[in-house]
Image 1 (cartoon, rainbow, N blue to C red):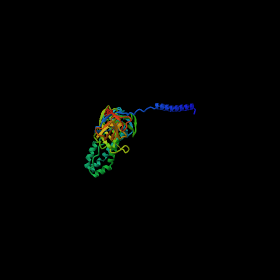
Image 2 (image 1 turned 60 degrees about the vertical axis):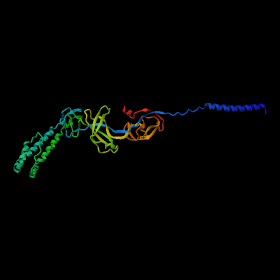
Image 3 (image 1 turned 90 degrees about the vertical axis):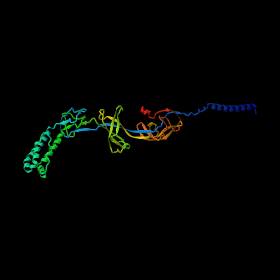
Length: 380
């Protein structure tokens, strides 16, 4: 074989081998080693469980209304003539003052005529009474002597015998008497008297207005006593009792008042499974329609703690710290509020998370940064 070809073949083989090794070196030089995985340890705040007695306070709210309220309606027709004061909203009246008086002169005249007829009827039977019932004559004579047509007609004398009763009834005395009493009752409806010290909260008519039967005239309330109606869960109905004191506060929480449970409805709302409770409150600072919040002391839960609701996982679990590791354990929630939950089932001394940890999971490594009260946020 030609010596030159042999040399060229050997050089080719050497070049191929060199190219392969060179390529391998280039590839190996571009491969980066993966850094070792570093385990992240998050810092957490914890609180140590100390079970105790947690008072269950049931919040409720609503608008207060006057306990004594009078809606003014007219049962008669006529012109609004008189009121002891200016008949307008906000006007105060004393007990016995005239709230509203309707012109009754025409009707009053018919009442007087009926009284006169009664008087004449009794007078006409007096001669017969003297002859036939001498024992009854004196009492009927006394009745006539005391009869005043300008005043309410007095009750008729009692009859002593059946014969006297038949005689008086047969002469139309009884029917005439009750006719007058009926007219007097209707005459009284022309004037509305304040039944108690109060204030006019609504006035729908003015002096000179023609008032018709059934027309609403206004509203009158006693501003010294109010009542707050609230709804609470049925399970707390056995705890509440009439006469129990209740703390009330305004919407801003700047004022507090003391109320008393005055009534508890015995009927349960089928849809909400709640009952209505009525709380009586007396305070000069209160006004009709004012919004109040009530805190009802329902019961005390023994061997329990209260935590923020945000720490509750899946509504029945919480994270605790054991040996620098998070563990998710089951608890028993017994009562929820808007911001907190009362739980049972944790032993004293257990280290529980007092603040949320983003991405927390069971088995996560943590480092305790320090102690933090569970309800510090809510109390501040």
